[in-house]
Image (cartoon, rainbow, N blue to C red; front, side, top):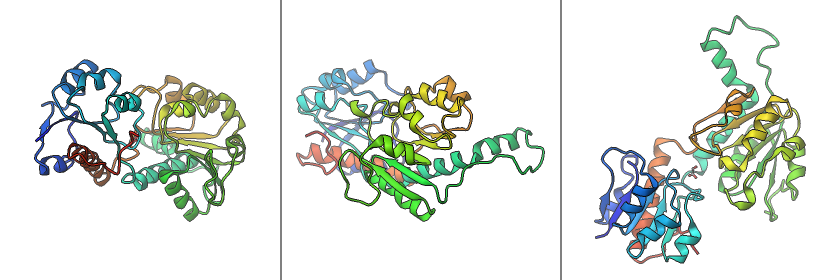
Length: 315
Ligand code: GLV
């Protein structure tokens, strides 16, 4: 039996793989996030950690876990919150939750494509606040989604799931990745894809190379009628540059689910026109969040059994 730190309360059934394998779950009573110091202290007492993307698992946390800690299982597909190199160097395995959240996240990306293009958030806000005084032929004039060109940036499982939805909506779909996918619509040059797209949806992981991938220069390449959607990671977009682009009409609208300094949102983004802002809910359906929790726990159980889990990210 191993001791497994579960940093926050997971959806019902989420920790079943741990209990089924007979492991002891160590957790806090009040579901409060652990400070970095508390994480370091807690990690020193356990063999495995099941954590969330809000937990910063850096070198200090990994080092505090040595020599007992075997595995860090992140309940998210993105693992930029975990120092994977430090973990690998310390012989600690890292797992994530690929595959189970693709369709749910793609649904949300599509929701943002539709909402941002058709200005439905602004229109609903006006209705609810009494600012709508009757139908008008020039009110809330958005951009058509059908017939528009969608540029998918990053074409992994989620990007491809968004592309499938777009086909059904009658969009023309392009995608950009550094290496040729061999799939129709691949555009080698990101700048060219940005210039050609009516809607740009971001699906790249956060890495050094993708930090501020969409910056002021690239926003200027986009059409003034274009819509930008980010359900990937906040730092992929320079938030201040995006706010300036929206204020200046350099692009038409934005749909954003992730932020550079969550839970902070850049104040200029909060007041920027035609901007839909959601609080990082890409994978937030009951079924998917439960499955994510279970998959992370299954990865931890496998490593504790001395097996190689399919969702291992450490080399
Ligand atoms: C959510 O943002 C995830 O990476 O799973």
